[in-house]
Amino acid sequence: MTGPTPAIPPWFFDALRDFLASWRQEMPAEVARAYWDTLSDLDQGDVLTAGLELRRSAGGEFPPSAARWYETARRMGRERRLKDTIELGRERYWKAECEDCDDTGAVIHECTAANRCGRPICERADESHTHTWASVCPCRPTNSTYQRKQDRQRSIKRGDEARS
Image (cartoon, rainbow, N blue to C red):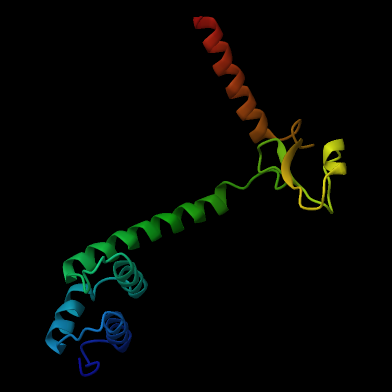
């Protein structure tokens, strides 16, 4: 490849050149143009991420075909958009009522030399002794999410007992 042309944006040319350099390969300009023609309708970030993924997982088969790169970039773009949508929805609608326990009813602690759990065995242990432990979260009586989960568990248990 000699360099970017007006039809091939510099970011794509640079990425393609870097990908090929890692495999010590060259690509004629017309082939680079064919790759760009195939990938040009996709998001730049998805194209670059897919190129890196394909280079990482190529198993000696690089450069991938333009079709394979396109399908990988399209799939990664769908996954990214889905993840972004879920994260946005989680931020907007799925806020935990209690940040300490994340509505589980249990606060997780780390027992370390500086912050012991209070068990006698831990008090006597050397500094390298660590473990995690849980305590009841004070939100349990008022946390509606925790209460709803507990009610569901009780109804499931009652249903199982009724069938026995």
